[in-house]
Amino acid sequence: MEFLQPSKNIQQVIPNLALMLQRNAVRFGEKTAYQERKGGKYAGISWEQFYEDIENIAYRLQEIGFEKGSKMVLFSQNRLEMLELELAVMASGGMAVPIFYNFYPETAELLIRHSDAEFLAVSGFIQLNRIDPKLPLKKVIILDNFLDERFDNLLTFESLLEKMPEGMESPLHFEANAGDICLNMYTSGTMGIPKCVQLTHQNILSQQAALHLLWNINDNDRFLSYLPWHHSFGGIFELFTALYNGATYSSESSFGKIPKLIMENWRLVKPTVFFSVPKVYEALVELTRESKEAEDLFYNSGLKFVFTAAAPLPEKLSQEFERRGIPVIEGWGLTETSPCCTLTDPTVKRLPGVVGKPIPGVHIRIDEESEIQVKGPNVMVGYYKNDEANSGAFTEDGWYRTGDVGEITETGLKLITRKDRIFKLSNGEKVIPTDMEKLIQHKCHYISFALVSGSGEEYPVALLFPNKKLMDNPDYSISPMDGCFCPRSLDELGRCLQGCLHDANCGIGQKFAKIKAAAIIDDELSVENNTLTPSMKMAPNSVMKAYKVHLDNLYGADSPVGEDVYMIRLDGG
Image (cartoon, rainbow, N blue to C red; front, side, top):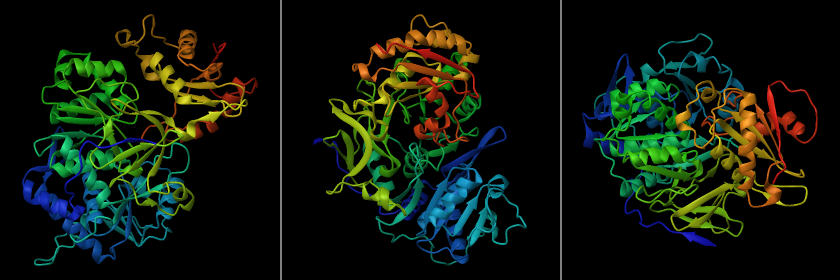
């Protein structure tokens, strides 16, 4: 066993979210807690009013039968009403269960039934229309202000804001135990059906106590945020970093989807910290090249740091931020660990795959099979109604098995792959597909996603999905490799990739792990067809299932396919 210990220990953790909210209402009073863009400007709510709303909602929830231990599914995109309702649920002894706002009816119903929630909140008509009125729910709360005659248990959010009677004791549970479950969050499900992670007040607040020792974030900071709250990166890590420290959380009005609107909101908010995934950083950096004004706006002196997760930030982007004197921080963790376990040190040169050292209170070790295991106050209670997953989740001595494979280096933990991505060829040799996937995407940024497969076969092959947006608008200035001529079509990309794939093969040490064929598929992975998770990560099992005919063709079949494809054959050397 190899161990990686935290450099500091947490001294004190606020016991529960009710006490945190009460503390902040007193400390920050008239300061803006949260704001949204309305028309051409941002308008917000003060901590004082925010806290009063949460108390009123909690009181009205009690009136409709919401008790300690009750669950509420929140089927909504990020918005003030969802946030107030979620916090009211958690701070009054209940459990919030946020789910992706755009789930199809079948998936939404599956999770609602699995969660055993008796209460449901929906954002508006789109979500309500995906709900069966016959679901066994006590109340359905709609955040938009209208009713629907199909539902006899529908309640408007507006009615929950009615002021509770004067002199009433606060309905919030200030005495809640740190170990009480307050949040059930479904995983992204990159390798299968989502699992329901049960998280406590301590899980969430210990993380903030740890980050408080590392970061100088306070009530003068401004967040411009689009990361969805049904996912742990946005809904726990980023959101509670803002809430805990009294910073102003500004909801990004395009939900991270329209780069030009993000930049316009950037101008209005002037964020001091920014949390994002690499693809959004790439789009914003591209915009800075259009004008000196955009460049000066984005790389402003008030920006303390940018945080990246979900995938490593491409080296060229890291260098651009470094050149501008803006620290880049990367982290690693899982929903099961609330989520953050490690952070990189912005004063240390970033290395590919290295995700830093443990945050205070978190301990990491590597077992004999190179699996990363975690212990600390951030680790979940367990999965809800999933005996199979729980049976293998923890070691006999209580460490959480993350399923990630890694190694310990001088600068911190280095990620290698997911344990369940490793496969064996027909000759018994083990292949780590992510090694080749990373090399391919490093060689060619015209590839959005790469998947290497080959379980039980004689050799590995790859499915490649082009970056259609970049091919439609090629930019010679950001080509990472000398000689890249910015392909504009599938045929051009295929001819160009022949050499890049050969070079990528040369970067793989074991001959058996080199790919011998690849298919560039003129199609896009998406959340709608389940090939991407709601957090925009590739779902490998779903991709292999959806494109099985292409995999078969790479191994010699000649089956008809529905998409344009460019096939590449390599010698594997």
